[in-house]
Image 1 (cartoon, rainbow, N blue to C red):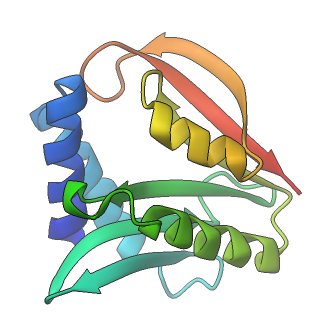
Image 2 (image 1 turned 90 degrees about the vertical axis):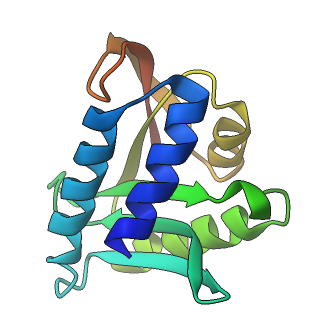
Length: 150
């Protein structure tokens, strides 16, 4: 799972945003660290499995932000499965889990220009609350934080 989630992110974001090795390493290490914390009931990851492969994932990290806030991370659907509603299904599962856990807020970080993802987030109650130029993913982009409050 760690390898596949990393591979999907590295491939997609290299294509759409020219993110490189620094980004892939960041994803790999953060996913691996998170997987080690799945015994905490406030953390969960969802994947779709097709033909013994993982073409989609999303996670809720209920620990890293503190103050009863959840962090939505590693949400991605392989190009071959986009447009079939799988992303919406995964996102709905993650949000239902977060709601059941009683988190007062769910946050996610992305960057400007991912319009289909933004539409999906906003359709599920997320609002853009912060924008700033940053290069935490290895190249400068307009980073965006979206928040959904209960």
